[in-house]
Each structure stands twice: as structure tokens, then as C-alpha cells.
Length: 280
Image (tube, rainbow, N blue to C red; front, side, top):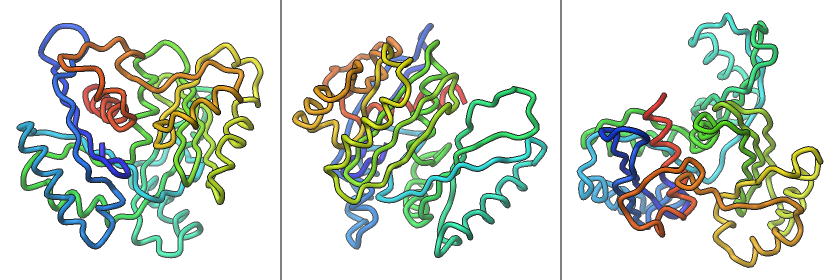
């Protein structure tokens, strides 16, 4: 997981019976903000060194770029992959100033009824430069099975549970509130922030929209969740059980390492990406 200021690599062991075991979790201070800047080569070297140190042969890369642009769109279920991509490219021309410089990820919504001829998907656009730069550096050294935005792995977490997951991501520039079940989205909202002080307002607005969900826990992730004062203020304002997202606890995973590094939001997303790669 390549976060804003940190890169975290998680290794899973699939050879033992039962659920995968976490055998390693290491981080280096190199993130997407530095990788997008003029001195990006220094950060690339740190990431390559970490992969070499952990003897990584195959990896799945997910990243949290400084900016990304979500769009909900409806697709005909009969469309093949090339036609879906063509529709995404057309919609990019409506949304972005330089659509040719962007790539996109697709995250599926839960389809009701299941036999509907159309399906809603979340289309997420982000600049091509950063993943291309990463892949050019990593490809000669390791097999990169996938490279995507961090969002899809977080949604896929719910495919490993029997319950709906409500997740709130708090970043300085935006707030995301999503609900997922069975590895698919049920609800998604993205709120860009002109003023970081508005963060709690938008979270309250979303979490109070449906009183029937008040008994379900809400999982928190993102940069702001590392700020104790922020989380305490949020807990005092929201009449819901709030938990920091911890896939190890959520899925009862076993780990051969200290639990402390696994509690960082970057580690949680890295675990989610590793699980998605294992069962995709």
C-alpha cells in the first residue's frame, strides 16, 4: 500500500490450512505525495529496497494518490470489457480537462434485482503518471499482478464477512463514507473539503441519514484517524460505535508479528489488498 506519506508492505502465508497468516509488515517513509514531486526517485529507491529486503517476488500494488475523481455511472450488463472502457473514456471527457492523462478503476455496486439489464458502477479517475512511474520501476524487479486505487480493496473486505461494513475515510482534503456487502458497494459518498474543519459535519450528515443503522459499528480509516484529538471529538459527536479499521481483528486473522504496525491505516489497506489478490 502506497499511502500519502508512507509505503507499507504486508506478506501473507497461504500454505498453512485455514485463513492466510500475516508473516511480515514493514513500512518506509515514501508516499504518493513525494512520488508525485520532483525528487520522486529517492522515494522509489526506498520502496524497491523494502521489496528486496522482504524478498518479494509477486506483489499487488494499491495507492492513495493526492487527488482522484469518483463518478457513479450505469452500464448495460451486455457490454464487453472494451465497450465498458470506451464508455469510461467518454465520461472522462465530460469530467476532466485532460482525460488522456488519467486511468480509471471500476468498483461494482450491489445489483438489485440481480437479473437487471443494467448495473451501477463507481468509476474512479486518477492520473496515469504515478502508477506508470511505479510500474516502470517495479516491473523489472518483481511481478506486479495488479495496480489500482486503494478503494477497491477496502470494498472487497466485506466479501470476507457476513455483515455489511460501514467505513468512513477521513483525509485532510476529503471525506468518504461507504457501505459494502459481499464485496460490492451499497452506498458511496465523496465530500471534497474546502475547509478541514468541515470534516465532522459531513461525517455526521452521512451517519445520521438512516437511524436503522445506529446499532451497527462504523469503521474509521485515513490520515485524520491517527489524530487522537480528532477521533475523540468524533466519538463525542456521533451516537454510533466507532472502531478504527483493523482487518486482523475484523476477520480474526493470525499474525506472526507484533500487532502494533498492523494498526496503522496504511497496513489495514495493505492487508485488504493482499486478501483481494488472494481471492480475486
